[in-house]
Amino acid sequence: MSEIDIETRRALNRLNLRFDDTVRTSPPKKPTKPPTATATPAPVDWKQAAKEQYGGYYAIIESVPEIATLIENAVKGDWSDAKFEYELKQTSWFKTNSASARTWDTLKQTDPASAQQQIDKRSNDIRTLASNLGVNFDDATISRLSENSLRGGWDEQTLQNSVGAEAVKNTGTMSQLSTGFFGQQLKQTAAKYGVSLSEETFNGWTNRIATGKDNLQSFNTYALNTAKALYPGISAQLDAGQTFAEITDPYRQTAARILEINPETIDFGDPRWAQAVTFTTDRGEARPMNYNEWGKYLRNTRSFGYEYTTEAKQRAFEVTNQLANIFGKA
Image (cartoon, rainbow, N blue to C red; front, side, top):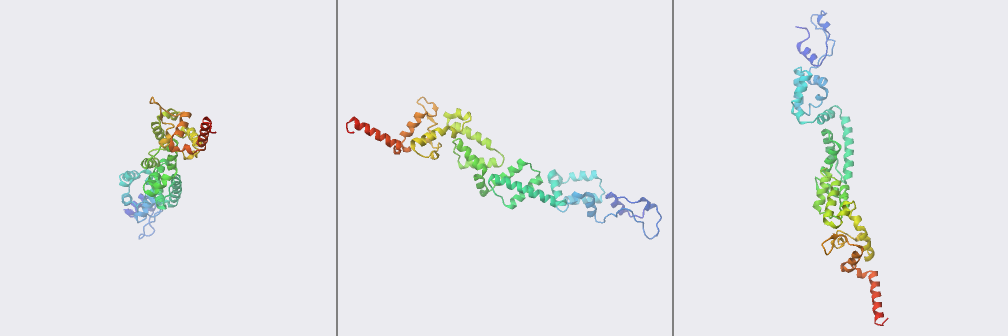
């Protein structure tokens, strides 16, 4: 039996330390005192040995008891690297956490300063995404999304979708979302095609776009197809790339001039005004009105108030004068 005790030799082997064989062969100077190895003595505490041998994995043993047990067994059992890797992959922690999650857990324990830098940067990214949606998150929500995204290794699209999903979780942020960027884009696109949206439809599209299930282009297609169904007489123009607003603008300007009103007050979503592009001939043909048809319609529809315009009064005066001339009363 060597003068170096068996347990010390095993500990040295576990830590990949070397000791000087000459110590074993050199005669002791004092029979009562064992020779001293040239290498650093093995730590008595297995945790200290594990910290030196397994580095990063040791850093998470306090938060993951399963790993603590594994490393204790590895140190005490003098496992090889291959044995340790095999047993690590059998743990629930390894099986239930992605590579990015395991890397993140280790980084937080071994280099918390670097981890915090990443969290701060990701938090700024999330605030920007939320601001683009027109919503504001509290610090706790931003912190949770930041850490979840880093631990999960989310790509940019996943992060954006998750921010959107967070925004639609409660009434407060959903209201912000509806008045934010996507909400405004949906309203503008619907108006461009003369399509009215119910609150349910509007919120549904806002929700899906914010969470990445749909996008603004798909809503544009929806609005176009809806417009073609509502206004079959201008379907060809819509297919050619014209918008409902562009098609109806000449009618708007004509109506504003004839009725002497602000063109911005004319809403072609109103069936009265929509007659300009939903006109049906006696033969059942759907087409837009021509200029003469539109003018006659505006002047003869009493709800438009043409009779109160300067033009109408002038015409009435002219007709009165003509009648007077006919009967010799002028």
